[in-house]
Image (cartoon, rainbow, N blue to C red; front, side, top):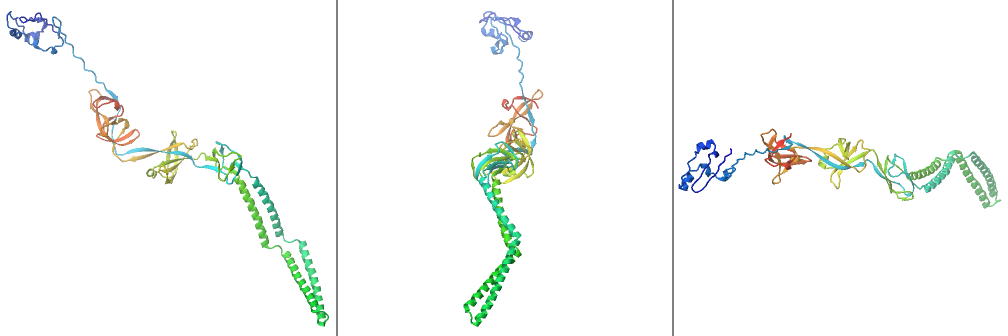
Length: 464
């Protein structure tokens, strides 16, 4: 409504008001009073004015003085409430939760050896290089063997001599030797017979006093000497006829065997002069080259077995007790997962980490390299009640606690709610999942993200 009033004269004596400034309702309620006569008192003049002349200027939207019109502006529209879209989760209580622990180790070869010679010598050849694949029994390096070769030839010659003597003993005496021995026995028998006759004649002469006692003794001595020679010749003949004794054959056979053992020892030393691969694998390091003097056991090459790789992972003792031999486990290496079987739980704790070393034999992991990092994920169930939330729903609270925002009072529009705050205590955190308890209730709809843009009492729009 627009009203117009003109003040024609405002003095101490006369006030005039134009009736066009009032609508019909105003005129009915407040009829126009007659103009005071000249000379009337000012108080009586003021009393004759209508009531709206006494309103304060602040109550009038617009006033124009000295003939200007008065305008009343229409009311401004109420601004629309802005809402923030949020993602929510209706929480439900849990009596337990599952955690996943990750333990790290490394990939190792099932067999890895620093290969060296069992005897010292000069390296004359290294037959492989780093990175070469070798098979079991393949020659890898050689030592100088000239002195061993000479010793072997000498031993072979000695064996030949001893073997010939052994064969002679086994064959026995030759017929010619036997005939010669028989002839010698016959000759000595004839000489002895002659000596006995001479002794008999000397005994007669001595009895007759024809010769002295000395001449008789001389003949007796000759006869006895021939008797001894005959016995010796007969013994030699009997030995030849009986053949070589077993003891002699055994002794000579032992000499031959001793020489054979010497030859085998030299052969062993010769075999030790050739370094061979104990298993199939790949040469990872070459430590010596040709011309180097290698001591006993000095590493020449490092050989790593290929194909049979293992993961050795340290696990706390209480967790290792839950693992069993021959159980299947999953091992992650370079963002890839491999199946493996637990083959051993070493009985001693690692001195540095104080963990139990778990050996897991991997399957189909031939492309892996020794030394790569391996990870074992183990799940564990904890019996504790609470609510599971995303860690992004947490906001810092007071006195070391945490809080979450939930949907509170509903608005006029669908899916529009006012934000309320709930204090919680974090019982467990595992990655992006947390277990909490506190003032949350079953079914509360917790705001999951964007909490840094929200304050308590703010209006948000649910995006379930």
